[in-house]
Amino acid sequence: MMKRHSWLAVLGGVAVAALVLAGCGNKSADNKNAVTTIRFTDFSASPDHTKDLKAMIAGFEKENPKIKVDLEQLSYDDYFTKLQTQMAGGNAPDVFELNYENFENYAKKGTLADLSSYVKKDKDFNKNEINKQAYDAFSYNGKQYGMVESFSNVALFYNKDLFKKYGVETPKADWTWKDEQAAAKKLTRKVDGKQIWGTYAPVTMNEFYKVAAQNGGTIFNKDGKPTMNSSANKEALQYMVDNVLKYKVSPSPAEMSGQKSEDLFKNGQLAMVHTGIWEFSDFAKTNFKWDIQVEPGNTQKATHFFANGFAVYNKSDKKEAAYKFARYMSASKKVANIRIKSSWELPALSSKSILKPYLEQTPPASRDVVFKSLNYLTLPPVASGFSKMSDATDSEFEKVLNKSVSPTAALDSLQTQFKQIQSKE
Image 1 (cartoon, rainbow, N blue to C red):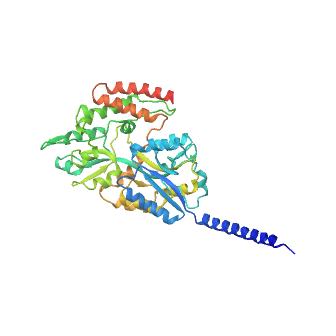
Image 2 (image 1 turned 90 degrees about the vertical axis):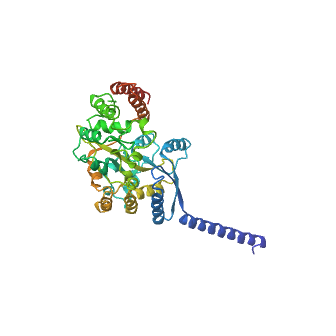
Image 3 (image 1 turned 90 degrees about the horizontal axis):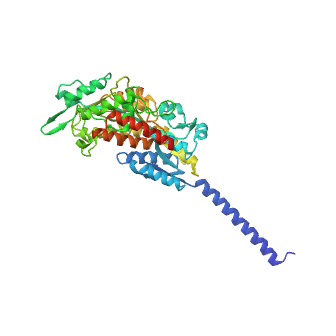
């Protein structure tokens, strides 16, 4: 017969085992119902589209109740500094927004998760439904390191009322630099103490690489070597500078007094301005009629192409959930509809039925120009050290506008500076 204390020991053991099993069962149930929280950082929504972004996130969380998105919004000026600091500390967000200009540098450094395997096994995702150039912009060395969320381009915006008032023919699709310049001369005037300029485009690297392309110029050759002081580039910079200094049809930085060109356009002080289609919703508030046209070129057409996408941090321990969110923001029809309704850039989806409401919105009346411009896209230059090169360019161009150096001398100097920057990278 078993002794009493032995029997109690057995009973105790059974009880403990039962508790352990019960605990395991609850843990399994908890894991099954656990919510994964991913951190997401964004720069493009604030301030005008914060509400739209939150609606997109809410839609994702509704379809994926086991994933919660913790949103942090930063201004573009602070964004990359903070992101780099977080990466240095191994504490970057699980998902973060990247523009095309910075994407490749992050991919090269190995900080981005390769999403190729997730894309391959994702039965709910069809990359053929995504704008090809925008999708491919976030691949590197044959691997997909990001999911495009949106893209946009630039057009020539013009004040229809000013053109009509002063009897100037409105911009046409076949306009060249000379046509724009000629119209700008007719429209530049002072009315009741108010200065009106004919046109505006910033004399900076962000604008220069596109204007150079409109003249057949490039920033780098096929081997990645700088070509800043080519004859085509010198002619392009001279055209930009002449609009400000020689013909005075475009305001100088001093004349702008810290105002943005978009504000001058809204105030009726710019007859034409080269800017992005993301301004549609803001310009809709103006009290004059305006429209858009494909940007003029010289030897050929060229216009900006910008793309934003979502990347997943390579050290994230929540990659699958992060990928699901990135894919949703890229390929969801609900997200596309929110973008279209709010005129927040173009959604990644290329379906004509999805984009139809976008074309039907006004202003501008000529929204089809957005898609016509896609035939002339010019991607931003990508190279190691390019941010330093861009800063150097803006500094040299400022000297040109201050008349301390000539356009030719500035580009010759930049050619040397670019080579020096490359040698140190």
